[in-house]
Amino acid sequence: MNTKVLSATTIIGDDIKNSAGEDLGRLEDIMLDVSDGRISYGVITFGGFLGMGNKLFAIPWSALVLNTEEKCFYLNINKEQLENAPGFDKDDWPNMADHEWGRTVYDHYGVAPYWD
Figure 1 (cartoon, rainbow, N blue to C red):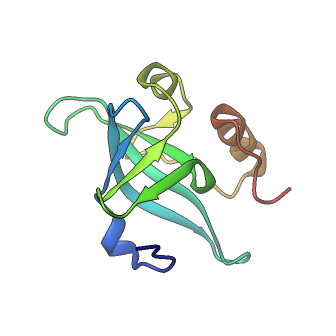
Figure 2: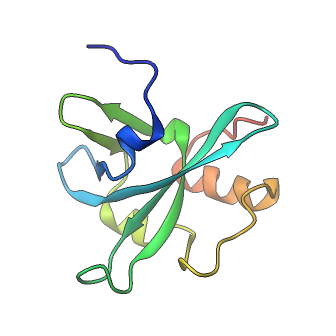
Figure 3: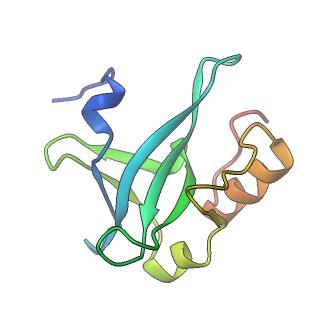
């Protein structure tokens, strides 16, 4: 099944894995660029213990690959790369509309920013 349109509530909470099958976290939120009508980032949570101390990461939407059969997304990085990615605390979100900040995020994941 090649699904092209899903509700956000259908995929929020889906697991994020890499090609080695390692768990990289869970999709917490989706950030929309409402002026462009595009999804900018998937926000994932990773790390911590029993939900405490989790760090959040904005992942370029184009870096995530949906697998509808396994109800998960794939991200082509290892755990160390994710741990070294620009992250943030749940109570201190960055300005995701800032293209300068966004460029560092997109560069980290090796994908071109959608606004270029």
